[in-house]
Image 1 (cartoon, one colour):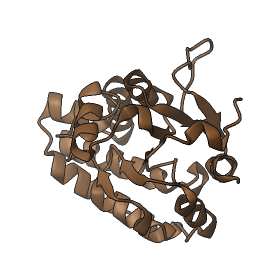
Image 2 (cartoon, rainbow, N blue to C red):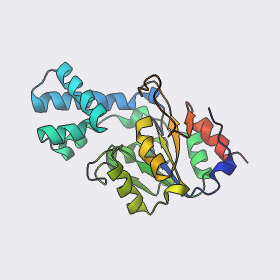
Image 3 (cartoon, one colour):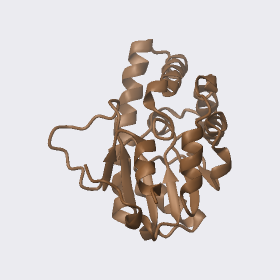
Length: 225
């Protein structure tokens, strides 16, 4: 596992963070609440059993990057109704993270959130973590015209909106697939690994320039004087 050095990031002026299971640990199970609400919404909207809804939900997620993309393309589901329902969760399971707060403060340049979720969910999450003041903006699924990562079109839209120079940016993600388009654009990439992201044996991860199981420990290495 490649160890990051502060000098490797001297030219970086934009730090792009995914939200769920990246800025907070997957062990908090916050996203598990969303998962349940997605299954429930699909079951009601399409008159499916919960098991059938779950199978459809995961199938679309793996095919398109989000379950929502498949639901809008194949079933005409109202995207805003879906997002409002699935992100109506209890964010109080998250606590303020002073360590993350200090590390984000030590990173030079702009910080952005780039998420396949909604801005409401991202705002609620970073407020609970006590780090909302560090982020210049949130590029959410609506800002990307409901086109999710890893579709290259949404990366282009994010870069254009925020005037990001890819070779001066680094992206953090818990999905290795979502880092491939970023690397292709010239961004440095950090794969924040956890057990929920399926990596097949022998799968090429060369687009993941850094791999870590501990985002905060990784950031401490980069900000070390």
